[in-house]
Length: 407
Image (tube, rainbow, N blue to C red):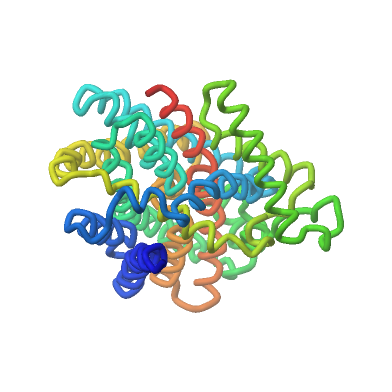
């Protein structure tokens, strides 16, 4: 009678401890790695039974909600921002392509094709790409490769954030110095002045408010009162079912079709933006789906984990190099400053809120007063925000879905 509740408590405790430690260390220790380590220790010590966990209701719900969560991401895509920041969308996409090309193209000769593909999706994006990869690896019986995407997801921020901050700080210092040399009032027409020297992003002179995540475009076609939690969940579940059928027919992962269907339903104003938020289910969905990723490592043995370390390190070296190469080449073609374009491309390694955090730190570090800090933040954050949406929210789902379908 108590076993399912006790097991649920144990699983959630693994997550909670990881998140608390990550908060205390200001994300220097990735929460997912801690949670996975605790779970593996519990399985290896016999405290948890992997068979019982696989059959637990929370894990079953997480598998069910995966498609709904991806559809939710489809409703979040900021079309208005994509139009304004299209150059940085191209930079982010090029960085992602560079990462995949280097990881799969070069990595296959070093660690093998299967290991390279297992890590290519996560290194080009984030959590959902990792979920797609671990689910597929488990489904086809390659449990020995499951630690690769999990380790990459946990470690990629430790590499991406410092590099991105280094480039972004150099760009911000140059931008502020340029504005001051022109004697431009900070916070006024400073963006327009910087644009003359090629230092401004595509949106220079545009209010940063346009790029805030909460601006979700036009309301849905039907009255908002119609969209109760049950109605939204029915639409998302029906869309997931349709995506599964299309995925089975085409051979392309259903998660990609979930993303497309969510995007189309939002574009047609049949769903509200951030649908799971409106249904009051986003927190529960992310928690259960995260559990699916955590428990996927349960079949891993100590030997599997040791074997995964070398492929993981190879991918963590090749991936960021590929991202920077792809982003830099595209920046040069589009005549963008690579000191800003490179951090935009590197958002594939951390996404939101990491992009906002480093922008705040850089703005605070280079500014001499509050007005200047706000001006710098409003200038550098929009390109990084759209970079994260392009890679983590959208592009990596496509990449992971296509690559995993080749296994």
